[in-house]
Structure formats: C-alpha cells, structure tokens
Image (cartoon, rainbow, N blue to C red; front, side, top):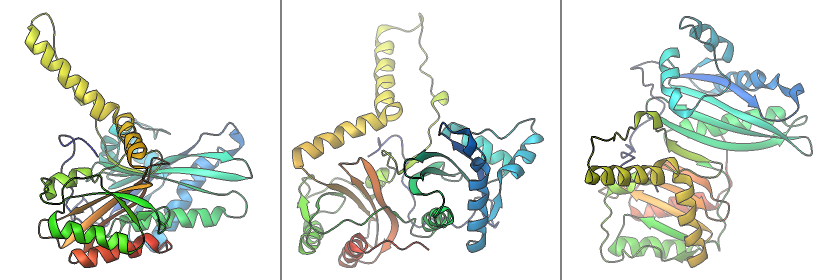
Length: 342
C-alpha cells in the first residue's frame, strides 16, 4: 500500500541468504538494544541482549556476526563511535563502513508482571529495507526462551520464503482480498477461502478484468504498520524542492503539489494509510486485509496480511510456488496452522 512511485518491484526469486558482498557469507551486525524504561538498573541489557542474539543466531545459521564492541572498534578508524540509536536513512552509510549486510538494532521496555517488550529492527543493506517486529516475554523465567524465540523469527525471515507470522487467522474471520488475479482465477481464489470457512468481502471490482499487473502489485510488498512492519528506507534529506523569487507562479504551484504528495505518501504515509484502513474497517466491517501478488504466469505468489483492528502486519511470506489452486491451498493451510519457529 505504498505509492507506486516510491517502491520498485521486489524480485521474488531473490534469496536473502546470499550476501550482497559477492560470494561471501552474510555479515550480520548487532547494535545496541536501547533501554527505554525509566529504570537505569537494566542498562546492562543494552549489550547483553545483542550479544545473546549474535551468539544464538551464529550457532544455527551460517553467518558472520559483529557485536557492539566489535562494531565500535571498526568505527574508530573513521573517528566515529557506535551510537545507541540511528535514523533509518543513516543505516546504509553505517553498514557500508562496517561491511555488514544486515544491521540489527532496537529497544526494550519493562512491563508490569516482570515482563519485557523487545522491539527489534533488521536492516538489509542490499535491499535498503527494514523488517521490524515486537516480542514480549518474562524477565526471569523466560529470558533465554525469549532470545531463542526472537532468533527463530529472524531466521524464518532470512529464509527463502521470507516468512513472518505473529498469529494464525482463524476460520470465520472476515477478510478482504486485494490481488492481481481476475476472471476464473479470481473466482477460484474467492471460492477456496469461502469453502475453508472464511468470509470474503468484496473490496476490489476486478471479477472480469484486472488492470493490476504483477509489477504494479509488487509495489505493495512493503508495509508500514503499528508494530510489525516491512518497509523501504527513504532519505528525507535527499529530497529538495527548490524555489525562490526566480520561480514563476505556475512553477511554484507544481512544486507545492509535488511537496504535498511527498508529505502524504512518504513522510506522513503511516497516518495516510491508517485513515484508509479505518474507512475499510467501517465500510466493510472486515477483520483482515490480504494482499496476494502473483507473477505473470501464476506460478508463484507472495502475501501480506494486515489486521485492521490492531493496524498491524501479522503475516508476510514470499515465494509460494505452484498453480493458483495449490497456492490457495498453501495459503489457507498456513493461515490455520500453529506457527513453528526454526
């Protein structure tokens, strides 16, 4: 649900296990996990957590890891120190300097009942995209389980299917489907979901002819949501709207129009999208919206699923292969199967 001018199509055949540095094992750098609680006694976890994530993922995944202390030493040659927090548009320069394919960073906050909420971000240098997700666990009894669970989420996302799911979608849910299928194939997709026990809302008038191409639907692979997100990183500093006394009225009007469009669909995109989701929820009374993109020959698909009530991304998956019937069966099976972390 991004603007078409902002996002290029994601190649579904891309294997994220391959490093951007040709032929090398991927390098995953772990920055600080910043303490956003008011209790400074837990500041020591700012490095304990990233070090634990680095050790855990290295034990089960072929990847070179860089811990905060190692990153700091690399940055010394640039007369820089590792900052606790970075703006997303600063991450490409950072990962270039430390020769990392991924940069993992985030925050944590203590919750009542001896619980902790971790907000983690994985930046991919090659794609210039960030995958963000939240996980909650107990401090004393489940701290190592929490580390393993978050590591499992990262590994699933790094896999060929680029899989993430926070919860299943129970039968009986009312879903709206946005796709590039039409005609008999679209009818089959609707029927498959209804036969599986889902209510399907008509949010797209494309039963006879769909003007959405596979390239156009691919612009919706990036999703910015309340907690879990997968989004491309834009750099607001790179955009300039030059005008002055030397510009005429018509030029100024054009620049003003472009600047407003940029504000709506980039800087304030999340608010713009949430307003659209609110209208969908009120008009159709649907629980979830699924975006399903098929390639030109209908042999592969990807999916994004948003929970309209929580405004959150709850499912994303790439490279679902087969014909339309088998892809539908795979999607429905995935929606109703308890999540297993690798």
